[in-house]
Amino acid sequence: MTRVKTNPIVALASAMLLLILAIDGAGQSRASESPASVAAVPKAEEVYRNVRFLRGVPYDQFIPTMYMFAESLGVECDHCHEANRVSDAKPTKQIAGKMLQMVERINRESFDGSPKVTCFSCHRGSPKPVDMPVLHSTEGKSPSDDAKNNRRTFSGVLPTVDQLIEKYMTALGGAAAIQKISNRVEKGTVNQNRPGGGPLTKLSVEATAETPGKRITKGFSVTHLGNSPDAYGVYNGDYGWVREGSGPVRVMWDSRRDAAQLEDTLNFAPHLKQLVRRLTVEQPEEIGGKEAYVISGRMSALPLVRLYFDADSGLLVRLVYHTESAVGPVPTQIDYADYREVDGVKIPFRWTVELVRSVHLTYQLDEVRQNVPIDETIFAKPSPPPPMY
Ligand code: HEC
Ligand code: HEC
View (spheres, rainbow, N blue to C red):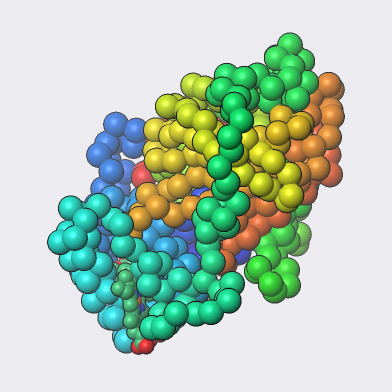
């Protein structure tokens, strides 16, 4: 059995960091049974070999849960794991199991089973929680803390959801100009950085989007600029699939497909209201010293999506979404910058994706071409359908 190993290249290759979440999703390979979109999501214990505490958790929430562990404790995977992640040799892994039971008990007994207390509640980014108040410290802040601090009460009349979306469409160039674009090919690079540290990896990315609702993102390591990418992720309507490294093609989890749709700058804006449902206006926030209007809603597999529009320009400057895990939602934040006009339509040429401390990606486009001939086969759904894991 070949296991797909964690590989920063793979991590970078997806225009969405969500590819990363699948890296350890390989587990034991099993025969593909039925098309994934109709099959029930398998349980963690059906996919992974040594699951004692997270039994019953949908397998697509398992690796996000691991990311929550790492993020909450401010550690890397190897804090609890040996190279073979099945092993229980590390005492920290055993403690983490006990902690899971404790957290489950607290939430069951005190919060009617809703995941109010998470690993982060106590750990706040450190392996050993502090047991006394910290004075004047900025340690242990999460992006959501920042968001809370930036949230102020706004007494004026806020724009409505429709007004904000309309202003956004106008800022992008207007519905008519957007409609004239049938495809978009973006080329650039992506750097993985460690916040506060230096660059880790860099690779080339290429994304091709087509209307309606199709996009493929490919990642190439610098040493390998051939035709075949090191990894790719495709979505075509409601169906997505990915391949990491030389591993097998697998179905994209629903949460990753939603995230891929969010990141598709060609298709997202005109279909925003179909994709993100139950939109409501929230209090404005400040981003980089500028006021941003905020709307939030949900997608089919993402319980929360929050969109931030620059109050002056109307452009989307930030996007935050939550992925479910067994220990509460895992936030991802995308900041858009360097909007440039191509064929009458504004496109962000730079964006950063922040998931957990170990995953911080900066995309920079060098080139965007639109309405070019496209080989349709790149969006062809794999047949027979690939396995889920
Ligand atoms: C705080 C400790 C901790 C950290 C950090 C951690 N894990 Fe885990 N991991 C666990 C525990 C505990 C289990 C077993 C869960 C259970 O039994 O339900 C586990 C199980 C796993 C498994 C299942 C192995 C198998 O087949 O049985 C994988 C895969 C895994 N972790 C990947 C990761 C990855 C990837 C990271 C880094 C993003 C990570 N873990 C970070 C504690 C941790
Ligand atoms: C109610 C508070 C609380 C919560 C919630 C909590 N922990 Fe802990 N955790 C602690 C305390 C306290 C310690 C012990 C620190 C020490 O030894 O000084 C600890 C220690 C640990 C350690 C050992 C760290 C080391 O390096 O020795 C691990 C691993 C750990 N916790 C994982 C988790 C995980 C995973 C979760 C979520 C499932 C979690 N904890 C939730 C309070 C908490």
